[in-house]
Image (cartoon, rainbow, N blue to C red; front, side):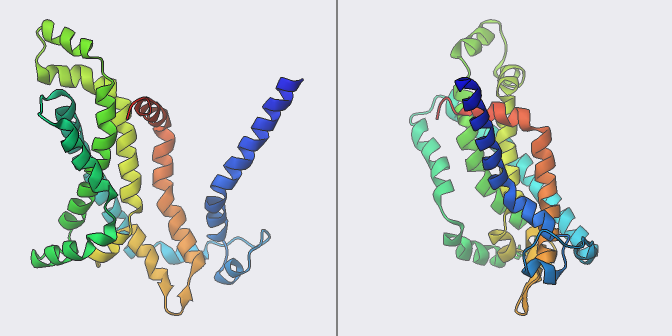
Length: 270
């Protein structure tokens, strides 16, 4: 009986914590079907309407959606290639002080964006790269690569040295060993790191609103157009935000097994 009671208490607490955790998303979803006047006065009883979605989904929205997809996937692809190569070099290449180089990668993640935005803006302006895909992707790759190096290095460290030695004895070249042994062993970790970079890049606003104007601005910048001097259009912002979070949620759902395995594996060392 005691075990049963404890189990029920744990289940109830888990449900309550989950509800508290997802409440902002649920409230955002509900508010997106309200009129602007209904959003101001919180309430559960209202007449649902698609007014906000009709106002939000237009040609401009689709352009920002395409920009977000292109920029995010390009960032994840380039960051993954660079981070996997760097992590492999840090772990398996004989360096004098690999710890110092690793710390340099990690320390760049501690720098707040507001501390570098001014020099970055003036540099891109001098190069005529403001409001271009290249500029925003370069910024995001610079922010995403150190994060992935931090995570993927731990996954490579967990590969037993005996496996590498056995592959060398069997005559397998380093390139063949990397693609046929190391990548399959660290696949879940790389996917989890790539997904985290995807989420961070997809939701990023500060750099996007500063470096982009119209040609390469993302969905997060598009949502800010409903924050004007006359006030905040909460219903339209909730509708936009609901559509923005759909893609990360769907990707997280289909990759949750790899994400959990990767994060669990990376938690052993670090």
